Image 1 (spheres, rainbow, N blue to C red):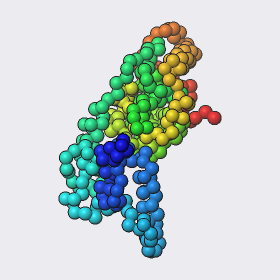
Image 2 (image 1 turned 135 degrees about the vertical axis):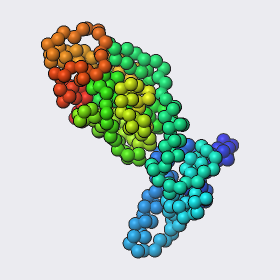
Image 3 (image 1 turned 90 degrees about the horizontal axis):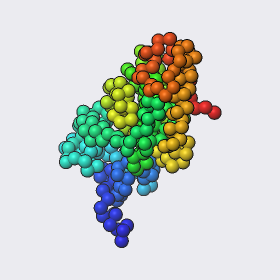
Image 4 (image 1 turned 180 degrees about the horizontal axis):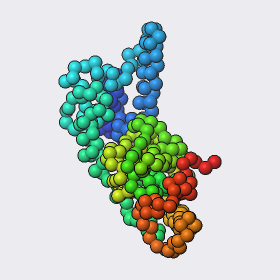
Amino acid sequence: MNTTLKLRTAPDCLWKQAGVVKEKNCFKDFFCNGCRFDRAMNRVCIANEEIKRQGLPLKGKSAGFEFWKDRLQKKSLAKRPCIHHMKGHIEYKNCPKAYHCIDCEFDQYFHDQFKVNAVLKPVGFDDVNGVSLPMGYYLHSGHAWIKIEDQGMVRIGIDDFASRLLGKFDTFSSPLMGERLEQGKPAFTLSRDGHDVSFLSPVSGVITEINTQVRQSPGMINQSPYTDGWVFILYCPNLKQELKQLMFMDTCKGFMGKEVKHLYDFLEQETQLKAADGGALVSDLYGNLPGISWESLLKEFIPQEQEP
């Protein structure tokens, strides 16, 4: 009985809406990157395109399969629905961009209004000698965090320690949406005055969204590293297993306490100034201590590659 009810209420898959398949419902809330059916259909369509390029005839039940976007592009503009309408987010609107959403002003507007404004709201914060740690976030030793959402999705950003250490960033570069990141491998790069720092990905997954506001104004990371300054949303199919490699709650506090002590010792050695035990870290240590090199800070505190 429950199965029958689910079939009646689940929306039609994008492949069905485009007319590529006759029957298929979506139970993934249109998170296609996590859908086995979508991956299987893409493989078949890629194979069909290769057969066509070789000048061979298509055979079998899959001969009529093509990418759902290609099928819709064959229709008149009035019959090409916007993907946000297909997902049930808006009333009918056609797609004038041939489903190349990255160039679409409406798609940008939609994400700005309905995604970015759904800001993170940590339950609370712990304070470790002036460094803020949000409760409920997982932390990687490379000073990047994740916040679990739903459907295997997580948000990623950098922690308050890294933000205070390196100061205000002016450039942000990253892979494109749809590309895959590997746990412990470089995920994105921030720059300041021509100095680059890469942050390692806390988990493996496919990029489903990039914070466009951070891309335009990387300084947002320093203002709100745990909320508005998030960087990516990833779909992580092996999340449960990879969380075992991250720190959580008390382990995060213990790690951060050691990092702050290490920083005090490092500053005392480099500047010959006695660091105040238990004192709060100021923002922009790099900018306020011109005798400290960018490279030395990365070497001591921000690993640029995973340790073996």
